[in-house]
Image (tube, rainbow, N blue to C red; front, side, top):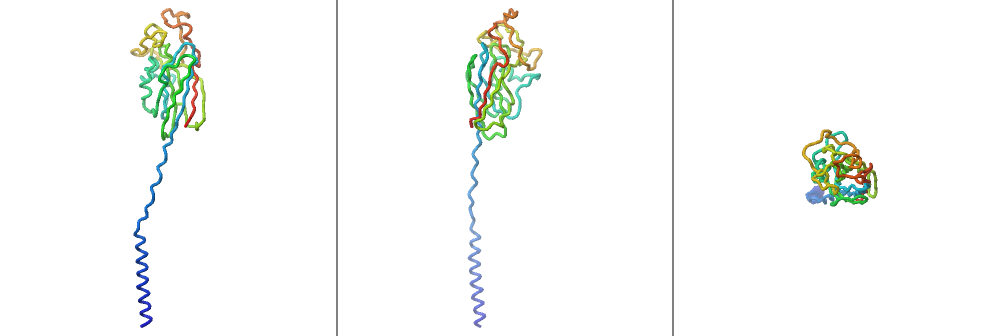
Length: 237
C-alpha cells in the first residue's frame, strides 16, 4: 500500500508540473518589427560654363533618368528636343518618359558665365544624366550630354568634360530675321515642320553676314568653336 500511494502521489505531481509547463507554451512571444531602411538619396551638382563669345544658353535642363538617351547623332530629334533646340523651351524634355528627377538653371547662362543646378533622386536602381540647353543665337543649335552613366560616382567624386554643339536638324539654318530667338534677333524661334535633313548632327557653326550670308542677322561675334561649354558633375550626397 505504501508503495502504491507513493507512485500515485508522484504521478499527480508530475501531471501538475507538466500542466504548468504547458501553459508557458501558450504565451505568444511578440517580436519587434524590423526597422524600415532609410531611403538612399543620390544628389548631384551640375555646373555648366559657357565658353562662347556671344551665344547665351537657354535655361539649362538637368535630368536624372533611367538608362536611355534623348538624342542620337544621325537619328531624328524628338518633338521635345526640337522645342528646346529651336526655342530654348525645356518644359517637354524634362517631363519626357524615363525622367526620374529634373531641374533647370532658371535663367539663361551668358557668355563666359557659369550656372550650377542641384538635383536629387531617391532609391533609384540606376541613374544616368542628361543635360541640354540651346545656343539661342542659332536656328536649332543645342549642346549637352545624354545617357551619361553616374553609377560609378561615390559621394565627393567629380567628373568634368567639354561638350560640343549639335544641330537638331529640325529647322533650316537660314539665320534670317524672325527665326533666331536670342538677343541677336528676338524672333519666334520655333517653326512649323522639319527641314529636309531631319536628323541630329554636329553643328557646323553659324555663317553670318561677314561670310557671305547677306540675309543673316548674325555677325562674326556669334560664331563659336567646339567645344562650346564645359560641364562639371559632383555627387554631393
